[in-house]
Image 1 (tube, rainbow, N blue to C red):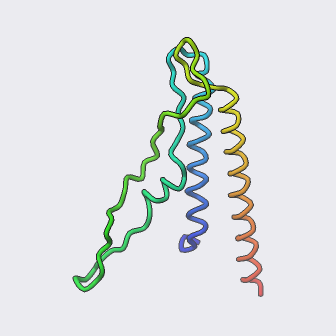
Image 2: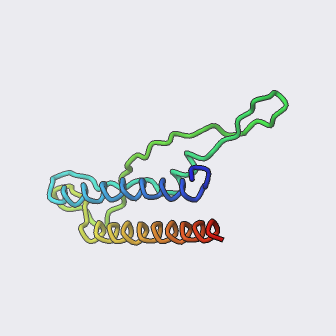
Length: 127
């Protein structure tokens, strides 16, 4: 199943959602820490562009890709907070709960797509 691109993308998406959920949990845990800045991860589309497949030339007659391979690491970036408290903390619990809801919704969507694709593969093999 490694050759099926959809399964690889779904796996990467699940990994990204796991990292995003960890960052949201860290933000909530530090909601009362003075001078703590809320964080968020890069968008999944940016991560996929940075880790896209590149052409490999095994012969001088092959075409050469214009761009190089980007850094595949997911880094946290400073998020835009709704409010900054007097202590300098920029964590908004409401905003973090919205992010947690987005993560849950996206994870359910990803698993639903994988289940549907898996059922399709099984039905094609049975036929």
